Image 1 (cartoon, rainbow, N blue to C red):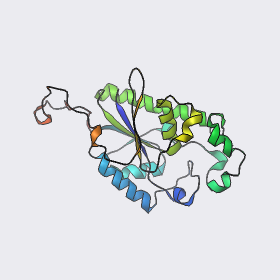
Image 2: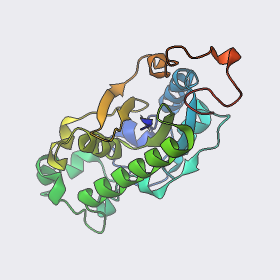
Image 3: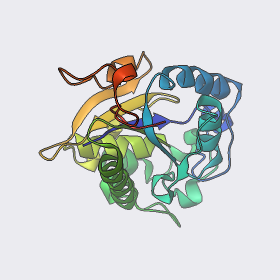
Image 4: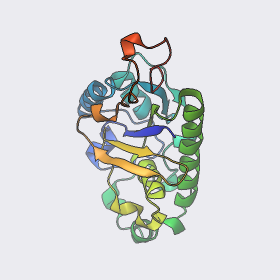
Length: 228
């Protein structure tokens, strides 16, 4: 199967101020724009077969800065969790809400007031990633790399699923702004290749099979990993 890179968007004004943005149209701040440019330098080394994003503007801005030459596909399955009445409120204030300890310790039971269940968020995000992974594999081969730009809790839920963790354990994971987490799905099990990574990504480029022609000698369209 293909390998997916899960990119969290760059820092936003809400991240900086300690607010819960949810699905509000918050944008990258100056720090977040710088993060997006730097992660773009890392990603441009990779032969990405597909780029998919949450519809929210902070993800689209991140990709516009990181990979301006590419036009991503938008998938509603990668949108942030619907926090309902919690959206736009300071985290310090939310920490006093009786629901807060449940979010931290038993998130699989949480349904946000006038919002989404965390279990539903996890299910639709994992389904979206697995659907795209199967599509990329079918179209570009098992060595293909592809990118999904989404949100912190969404990435943590996808990673928890790949690791075989119950959703109640996903708060142990971290996905910082502009970090990359990498999962390779296989017929037997998924493998977590990297988590919350901010280092060089060039080691992810597929190596040519033993005896294969150098890329300059290979037939057109025969390179591993698909096109950008």
